[in-house]
Amino acid sequence: MTKLKLRATEVSDLEVIASAVQDGIFQIGQSRFDSTARSFTLRLSRYMHEVAAPHRIESGLRFDGVLNVRSQGVAHDKSEAYAVVLGVTFEETDLPAGYLNLTLAGGGIIQIEVEAVDITLADIGEPRITKKIPTHDG
Image 1 (cartoon, rainbow, N blue to C red):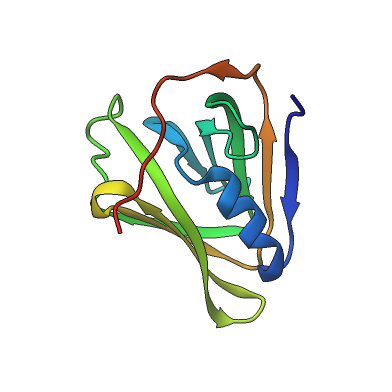
Image 2 (image 1 turned 135 degrees about the horizontal axis):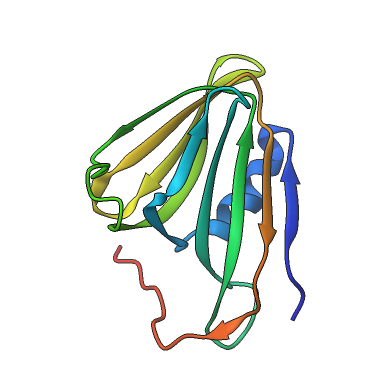
């Protein structure tokens, strides 16, 4: 299996990364906003939609050019808690600037204010078989 290494620098690139991280699971304590480096990173267990058999792989997701990060419905006081990524969208403010919104299962959202779209996704582990296959109602 091929490991993914993707970069999005335009809004049109975002759809590919969004589909790759859909159903990714991450621990709240594994996300980090570094205001000095102006980056937001998270480590996630990515569901590999691109392969036939159900697999997950550890991946890193990095947002650069980050000005601020806000969230709603995310239990930051429970760093051991897990969240599931449902989608990533871009909300334009003053192109190329805007908000990257990570929509989470259960209604949570992480809003990342950016100067421009600059996202890197890299698989960093080995694929492993999973018995849990994501399903989406509706």
